[in-house]
Image (spheres, one colour):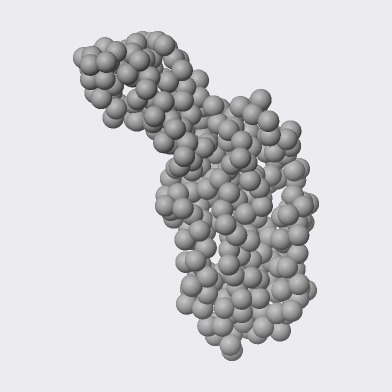
Length: 283
């Protein structure tokens, strides 16, 4: 749900680097080399579909360019792009995630490249740079892009879709006996209806509400002592100022982070600022 700069390598560079260190005598390498132009022609259709939000309309396939098998393309990725020949491209794409944070959840660290359209169903795009997104392991597993046959079920693509200009993540504060934050997509945030449907579907598929609630609870535990001191020293207005400053600082870094939503909601709650943040069992 967070946009990324597009990879700097194009399809030609990725394909040629991936096949450059394969055993030229192996039958799969022979097939790949003989079908280079055909493979490239299919790879180069990806960006057009991505820009038009029609990736869901692409048909799953087993064979590429008439002769190249799915297993050939999968090896082109594992033994080529992720191996010696194209590793510089692999590493450059991994480096696109700011602070190594997964663009799908915005929280966990990237561990691998996700095939936005899975190579098991769309092998033609196994080494297409625009199909490769730095991702955490959980989001890579849960994203479900390969099962989307309608646009509303297609996850937002970090290279083609950008919803960062709107504040779409909202937090709800449950009051007492302990403060609990629940997170959701704001249906009134102003995003176009289709983007909102895709965003909500992805938010639910990745279980982000549960993830963000857990992180918010941990964040609250880490600042509870400071909040007590501020409340004792300068009262609830001081607590509110502390929370507003934290929300603004977090928003400057990432508008739609759970931390931004948490601090913004907390700062607007009189109950929280008057001491609702505390845990009576820990006093």
